[in-house]
Image 1 (cartoon, rainbow, N blue to C red):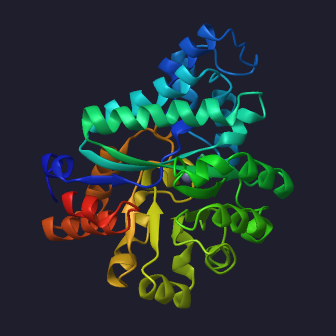
Image 2: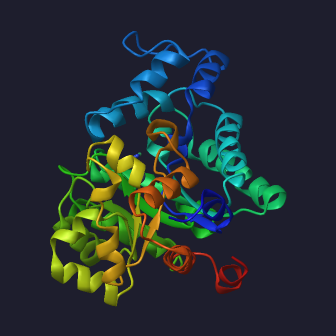
Image 3: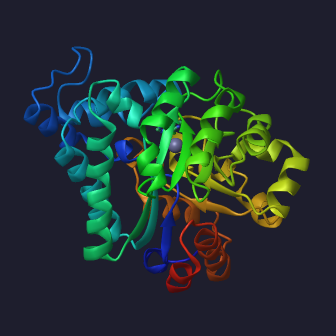
Length: 334
Ligand code: ES4
Ligand code: ZN
């Protein structure tokens, strides 16, 4: 097994992180107070109680219910900045060099917080991470798939200027997967891409959903990356396609265990992906909820795949850099 020190020093890229999912209980309660937000009576009322709840979730929906309540404490541009800046400072210490991060504008616009407030707060933190920590980053706007596609299309239109000027580098699709397949969002993806041909496309697929959702995201939404994607392993033809088209899967090991997608990290088909030349990266998803940031995910995988040597880990780090959306000059630096 490789050493923790080696994993820490390895230049790491994050491709699957929801900024709202970095909201730690010890920031959530002070923000609620600062913004005079009353949390629901059924919601845990102390940091200790909330941390206790975060130890286990029944499934994706059980987690999402807490996640969406948590987002309610974010109101001002400063709140979004503080949240993202706290995240960057934390992962800087874990050897993170590049981050492509998700956010959900609709979780905020539905409460009267404008897309400008959210986007500019996050963007300011990204700029500070670059200048003060040397971390490069990209913002990926996600659509909440439990919201009507017409409403999602309006969100895409509301984000037009940020897509055109490159503030938003990518479009993603998250929230409850199973009842909301990719085909519902074809027009959203086409419209967003029409605003900027350089817009990158990804989607959550194959977490709780089937391998067919992964194939549909590729065929219907023209994504070049898949978030989670672990259920692809059940379709041999799809595995060959992911390898030949070099579609990267952004795997989230601790998340998959916490949401009971798998019982243990050992069950993830990571060795099969390596053997079949399917590129993947290791990521943290919603670290405040799932008990670990990027390095914690790397360490857990190293424990559960003890045969992987320095060469294997070098290959994983290289695949993550290759699959990033930064330009070739930055990839070379990484
Ligand atoms: C998410 Cl783990 C996961 N899956 C789908 N949507 C999400 N939003 C935040 N975390
Ligand atoms: Zn996710």
